[in-house]
Amino acid sequence: MTSNSKRESSHTQNVIDAIGTGVSLRIRQVMSSLIKHLHDFARENEITFDEMMAAIEFINSAGKMSDEKRNETLLLCDILGLESLLEEIALSKENKDNSSATVGTVLGPFYRHDAPVRENESSISQPADEKDTIYVHGIVSDLNTKKPLAGAWVDVWQANGIGLYEQQDQHQVDYNLRGKFKTDKNGHYGFYSVQPGPYPIPSDGPAGDLLTLLGRPIYRPAHIHIIARCEGYKSLITQIYNRKDPYLKNDAVFAVKDSLIVDFEPMEGNSKAKLEVNFPIILVPS
Ligand code: BEZ
Ligand code: FE
Image (cartoon, rainbow, N blue to C red; front, side, top):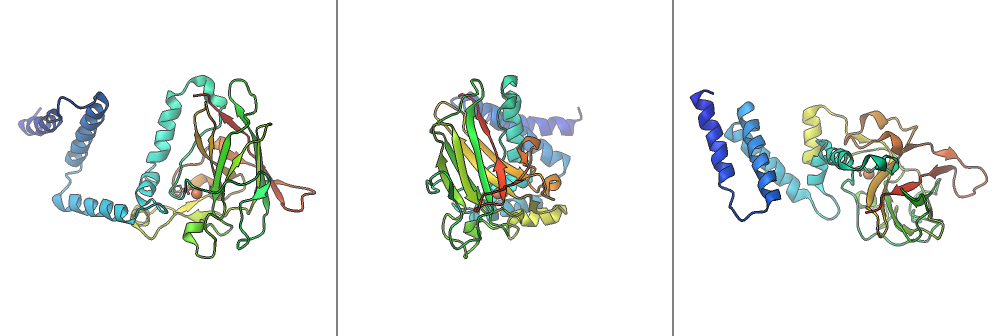
């Protein structure tokens, strides 16, 4: 080791050693590792003071833009592949026997926790929006017993046909294309909706600036978001994708998983929908 690199690593060690004795093991582990990687990153790339200030301004501007309706900071984590990586890490820690459970994927910045409860077989599309074209349904069941789960909650949200969530579009009513459905005694949920469109992720802020800087595409394939919850089971955050979507291979946030891609099948004899989306949900006991 040269004397320079000795001095550098002792500086890093001093910062790690400054962590107080009373902190939890987890905080000590995570923060020591963060300091080490951050210092190594700065050394490897010879980061300048001006570059650090530019990064701080960038993070501050994402923070200022974030609120209940739009989470720009989460969007940054998504385009850097962090949220999808955490999903991968969680999966690798799971028991191998869980591999037939429905897989999770990113939450994204458009979730609203207080969506209205709706009746099964009703529509999540409010009158101001387009006509229903799809029927989405499935059975929620237990991974181990395979038994259907009655009384599970299926919380859904999606963009409209031109790829806009209600909070991005003054022509849609509040909570349009959102709803919470409770499974019946057979574990069944079902709702009508419009076919969602692919959309560019919000690019009028720091996340968009970063994508432009990196020369990356800004589109997400069309999808329907789901959070499934049931007492005694791990909550599942996931999305449904249409096999025919042209953007499946270059999702801006790396969230597509093969097992979440389904066929939107033509639906005969249903006056309300042209396409059927069958999406069974298999939950893991907690
Ligand atoms: C979404 O699917 O809503 C989404 C996910 C990550 C980033 C941006 C949007
Ligand atoms: Fe989305």
